[in-house]
Every structure is written in structure tokens, then in C-alpha cells.
Amino acid sequence: SYELTQPPSVSVSPGQTATITCSGDKLGHKYACWYQQKPGQSPVLVIYKDSERPSGIPERFSGSNSGNTATLTISGTQATDEAHYYCQTWDSSLVVFGGGTKLTVL
Amino acid sequence: QVQLVESGGGVVQPGRSLRLSCAASGFTFSTYGMHWVRQAPGKGLEWVAVIWYDGDNKYYGDSVKGRFIISRDNSKNMMYLQMNSLTAEDTAVYFCARDYDIFNGYYWLDYWGQGTRVTVSS
Image 1 (cartoon, chains in turn brown, blue):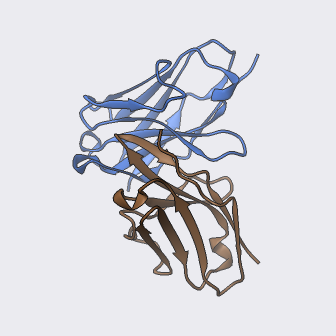
Image 2 (tube, rainbow over the protein chains, first blue to last red):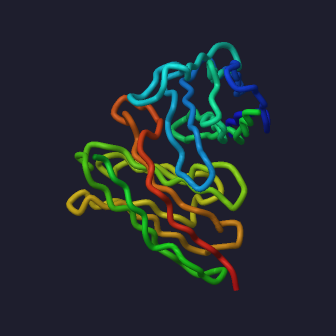
């Protein structure tokens, strides 16, 4: 079955750029999306179709996908961006989530 | 506005069954695919199942295939998850979520409910 791999944790200073990666075999040939989940809350879609932002998602969130890696970039990271982030794709109609990355803003 | 409300969670003994429900409102339910996703305590997201807008296509994650059944009633704007032969490993918060664009074969989840908690314990 298809697998996505994320780093367990990423740290960033306020105002700096956070980069979260998601790796999978030929992931660039698929579409990737990203969810943000804060403690006790439901996930929120922040990036879909590799790099599209849903309405209401700040412009500081961006995404890319090439080769074997999809990347979520948060520019000018704010304290409110501290959360878990999950990448997701699908393979033969089966949805696959990455293991999640805890983003710490310190 | 789009609203998804799960219900039916609770404490159930191993080997027993439970049915979850998801009530949808604020959009044309019959034109959207729908998913169940679960999250075990302190763990990440795990996809459970998807059902297409017309109910004709259903797909399941490996860990639930053969035990869980996803269904929907478009006349009632409801989706269901029948969970059979439950084990402790099924303990999780279960979310229902709407698919953004299943017509084009895209699987990303643009709206999520608040979740319902299922605990499998004797």
C-alpha cells in the first residue's frame, strides 16, 4: 500500500519560514493536500491540488509537489500556526495520510 | 453554511457492533462524496472509508475492510458507518468529512465534523 512519510516535528521562530515535507514514491505524479489540526479541533484543509489555498486560508500558506516530495511552506510563521500538519494523497481511490508533523513556534 | 454533525459514539465491548451517523446540512448532499476518518488517542489521522455521491462506489482502508460498512441516505442527508467486530484498536474519534471534488476523482476533504468518540473496552 502507498505510504507518505513526514518528519515528526519541526521548529520555527516567529516570523521565520517553516517548511514541512511529505515523501512518497513518485508523489509528484499525484496531487497532494495539507491539513492543519490544532489540539481538540477538527482538521482544516489549508492546501489542496498541491498548491491551491481554500478561501479563508492566509496567503502565508503555500505548497509545492515534485519528484518524491510535497512541501508545505508557511512564511512569516505566527504563534497561531502552531499545530499538527498532515499531508494526504490518494492511490487507486484509497486515501492516504502522512503520519503528521508537529510544528512548534518558539 | 456547511455543517457536519456526527453521532452514535460511545463505549462498546470488544466484538460488538456500533453504528455512527453523520448529519449534513448547508450543501447539496447528494452531489458530494463523503469520508470517514478516525484518530486514535494521541495518534495521527487514519482514513477509514469513502462513499461516492450516489452511493454506488465505496472504498475502505485495509484495517477496516470486511468489518465496516459505509452507506448514505441522500433523501435524509445522512451518512452512516456500521462498525462490526470491534476491537480495542478501533478506539478513536471518528470524523465525517466532505470530499471537495469526487466527480473528477479528486480526494481531498474540505469540511469536517467535530467527531464522535468510540471506545472499545470490556
